Figure 1 (cartoon, rainbow, N blue to C red):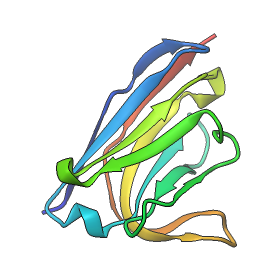
Figure 2 (cartoon, one colour; figure 1 turned 180 degrees about the horizontal axis):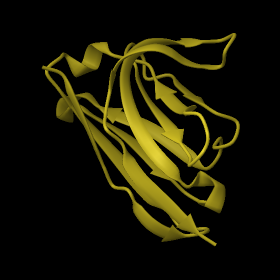
Figure 3 (cartoon, rainbow, N blue to C red; figure 1 turned 90 degrees about the vertical axis):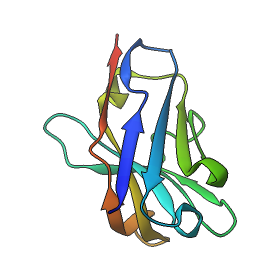
Length: 125
């Protein structure tokens, strides 16, 4: 059984930082593209960042580029999302996902195989 478990969410003031973690079990982590998505209240889920399984190439949504950094530690089956210079509009439930591929046309990860249950990030102004 595949499990993705996120942690690290919380409440932070605007301009602050948080680091999200996601641990995967039940599959060979190093063979999966990994990504982070988020869903704000009343909005659709959106792509945030991705990291490839093959060479750790990274991709970011324009809204977080330069502020967020995605990384992976294959030895620990973990993907991280370092979030700096947080803004109130970053408030959302953040989801970890595995699989799929990065679509250059759509500019996001598509076709994800597995999802975590999410961790809430609240940025106060």
